[in-house]
Image 1 (cartoon, rainbow, N blue to C red):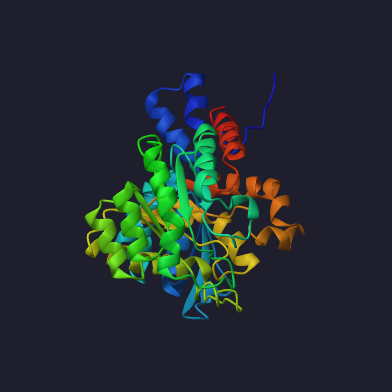
Image 2 (image 1 turned 60 degrees about the vertical axis):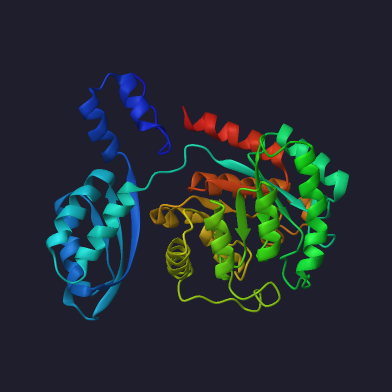
Length: 380
């Protein structure tokens, strides 16, 4: 006899099928083997006591503060630990309960509907400016075209082109100067007939620059202001372009001046809800969300967002993560931008594991290889 301890990340359906379990049993057992840990904040103490008992009755559990059973304080934070099967039962049961549990039940049902992306796309970075924090990403003219073609050969799914640095304390650039930097690249791409080979994204929030890019053949608008300008939403809508809504606290000039949040996950979630609703009301049909790593966040904020990226999957939009070679790495392991590839790979693989659909990177070849290895591990 042999006993093997299997990883929690295995493909449970595959193992059960190989074992010869019937199809109905596979669905039941796979649900029992999938665990959720859910943080519920500010729940009415009466609701917490009901949920605690209901959780225990189905084999799950709810962690609550000491004294909850005595209702010493009106609202409490708690942590629900349950399998998918238990969560499904609870999400139905709590719909009939008071004290805010109906809302909890609806949220549990949304969590059960979450599906991770089947494939993670790699977005290569092309900077047409001379002040990008990573000098090796700066290209112009012929050099830009060569870099784009190399990224395509290396397996990139998307190329993101920008001409204005958004690093902390970066200088403002006029829209005329921005256009002057990107137009030659647009023309070179068109001449090389690359628009039918790969998707192109414009990293800008200036309507004139965006309009020029979309007219040239770009399909994605990567807006660090999160569609603050309605004109950008209108351009995305009229061109059926994908809009990337990024979260940023403040501006590039102010964003790192002691950023603070009541709750980083809840605050950004609410921001996305508001911006998505506004964009959709203006006709935008395709939306991707970017939590904005490094844009008005501390190191702890950034790590929290990557670790808990799955929280945002209930918004039912693809998630983009841009962490490549950023200064948060220097705070963990002192290094210059050109020394941060290893850490970038670690962070992006964690983001992919936690639900990212797109990773925005300087090093396409290395990330394509790393993702292939990760995908192979996930099939075992």
